[in-house]
Amino acid sequence: MTTLRILGIDPGTIVVGWACIELDERGPRNGHAGNGVREVRAPLAARAANLVRKTARSDTLRLLEAGALRLGRGLPIEARLARLCVELEAWIERFAPQELAIEEAFHGKSPQAALRIGEARGVVLATAHRAGLAVHQFAPATIKRRVTGSGRAEKDVVARMALTELGAGPLAGPADAGDAVAVAFCRAQERQSPLAALTASR
Image (cartoon, rainbow, N blue to C red; front, side):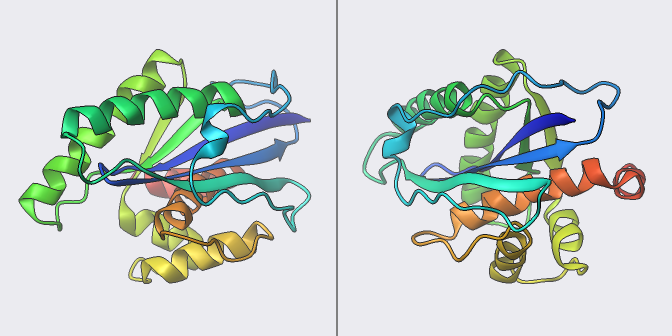
């Protein structure tokens, strides 16, 4: 049995959603890290807003924790990005994930919003690479389809269904935490389903 942890991130420069899920696999897969997961403790990142700790319904997939980090609207953008880097490093240190899942850039937003999200994504991608994590990016429609079966599902429905599949109840606070759960769950679904991986590559 191989245990894998996936850190899901919903990037932003005002609120950042994060979630860590754990997947038990029967045997290692080529190109993926194995075990080496250590005990979870509660340092700096434990003080992030809206933490939740749940027991999953599945015996192979569990939500360890999820939350939303408020970076502060009044701070300069460079200060917010620096704090995002520090907090992400703390989550990686705390949960020891082998993979990071993040939503691809979404061009449907306003140019200003897309620019800001792109800046946050850059921090996440660079930090994950420095930590040696395998990074997996998913289009919004792919996440919706993997979780709900429909690429046009509303985001709140996607988050709710992902939490239900993990045996977790609703999350308090910003919706960003639920979005992070959904992207991490999407990656777990991909690992569990070779057909999903083939579909994503087309």
